Image (cartoon, rainbow, N blue to C red; front, side, top):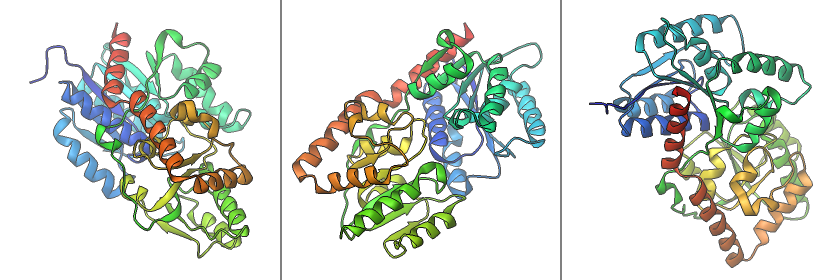
Length: 375
């Protein structure tokens, strides 16, 4: 039986993959465990078996169910049909809150949330999304124009990093009265260390695409191997530019030094190497960095997006993107660091993440935003 003060909450997102999906799953489960009635709407064409399994495991907690329908990644005529289907679902379920995640989820949620004279609170978490396009580009102008129109249909903005909050305020004007930064949160079990036996030297986890800066990592590895360091690397992930990345590794003479593995649970991936590298050109607040830091995994990362907020007092050791020499230097420093210093560095970062990125606090803060919007 739901609690008398429970809310009916519908989460809308596009692809059930990656950190955004993990965020929604954690949030939905936490809200349901507190007595709220929760549902999820997401794309039917992406996610594969892992998404199916995750949604099936979550199903018992979702009294408003899981609805899957086609959602294209890029804008198109199909968006109208999908938005109308979400609108019909909102009318049928009668939620108190419709929470859109990412650019496409935010679009559908905010267009759909006005039916039969009763309007649920419209909440939007960008997760980077539209705000990742470089200012001055055609994509940035298009998406910011759309965001300005949709901002008038948004009751409350939730940002997972102060970085994205600043970008949004710059594009949309002051949002202070109806926005908050709520950091992603981790489960306590995620702070257990991951044992590593006979690992490779360098690990990359994530999508295989240009935005993630994998070419910069390949160039840095080539520089280090030219010094006589016979480093090896494993790239865990999938994406639209895998063949381009493989070809770049081959051109730099790293075909035998770099291996590729399909996506896997992160703690299994963390056991594969000595140091994890995050060479991204843009990020919001990546779960993969939080999870690695929580597990005391040695980290080398770029100073982009919300990553400095994760590193806190250690943000000074982050490096700029698109800088193979700086990345090679950071890797050289970390691999040569005496063991006692290395373990102290990892433990300090883990303690900071444990204090700042709490799952119960994330759930409570999001619910507080819902109540503020409803008021």
